[in-house]
Amino acid sequence: MAPLVVVAMRECLIEMEGYQPCELATLDVSMFDVVYECPDLPAPMTIEEFRGLRDYIKNEAFLFFKNHL
Image 1 (cartoon, one colour):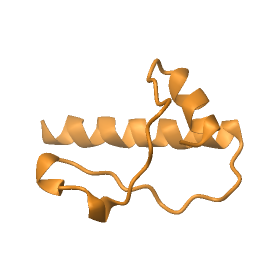
Image 2 (cartoon, one colour):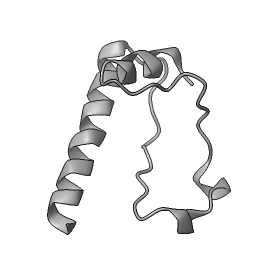
Image 3 (cartoon, one colour):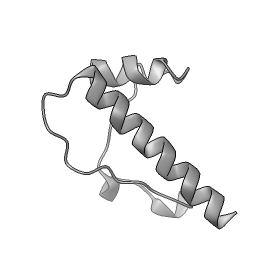
Image 4 (cartoon, helix red, strand yellow):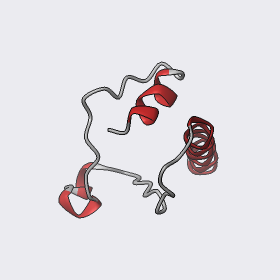
């Protein structure tokens, strides 16, 4: 896991240390109701860019669930 991802998520009390990203194709998608696939990310990213992406995904998830529950 990218070190700045760990830092950005820890700020939201989510511990990502030790997690490894994986390709969507390697998952059994029947285990999930919703899957969010991130777009290709520029590299390297700053902590501010990671925070922006984290908050964008959080907001999109909120709106999705607000409209579908």
